[in-house]
Length: 305
Image (cartoon, rainbow, N blue to C red; front, side, top):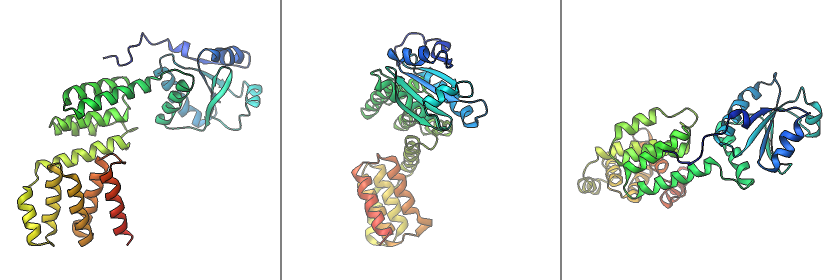
C-alpha cells in the first residue's frame, strides 16, 4: 500500500551532496529558489556530527524530493562558515528563496530532526510525507472508532511500512489488535517496539490500554462487587476489583471515582495499587480528556493536602 501515491523516489545522490565554497551559490542559494535546501555544517573531527549527519540524511531521503541537503565541511569552507557566523558544530540551516528560514545547533533525536524537515517543507509551501502519513493515521483512527479494527490495523501497518518509527501508527496498531480481542498479538507488537519510540506517549498509552484489557478479561460482576463495598466500605480489595469491573464495563468515570476513594481511605494499600491503577487509566486516555483532568486534579489535592 503506497500511502503517498508517489513516483519512484529521487536518487539519493540528487538529494544529498557535498558542497564547497565554490559551489555554495549554485548548490544552496540558487537551488533554494525552487526547493528548500538544508545545509549541514560539519567537520570530520566532530563526534556529534557523525550522529546527526546520518539521521538528517535519512529524514531528507524519506521526504522523497520535497527537500534537498548540502553538506559543508567547515574546515574546507571557513569563509562560508564565517559569513554564516557558525560558532559551533554541528549547525544546520534551512534555506528557501536564497535566505535562511530555520535552523538548529547540536545533535537532536531522530523524531525532532524529522519534525524539523517536515517544518521546513511546509514553510516552503510543500506537503511533507510526515503530514500525509499523519492524515492516514487520522483515517485509521476513524476506522477504529467505527469498529473496523481489521481495516484500521491494515492501515496502521501500511503507515509503519513507510515509517517504522511512527509512534502514533505503532500505538494505533496495538490498539487495533486490542479492539479485535487479539491481546497476544497486541503484546507481541508492543514488545517489538523500536527503541526510538518505546517510551513515546502513543506507545505508553497503548501499553496502558493493553493492561486494562487484560484486567477486563478477569473482571468480576459489578453488582456483586458493589454489594460487597456497600456492606464494608473498608473492603479495599472489593473496591479495587469494583473499579476494574466498572472500567471493563465502560464506566471509566465511576472507576476513577472508586479508585480515588480507595486512595483517600488508604493510599498505601497493596503498595499503592490505587494510585498505580489511576495512572494506568490516565495513560490510556488522551491527556485532555475531562476524566483525566478532573482525576489528576483530585488526586493531586489528596497527595498535597
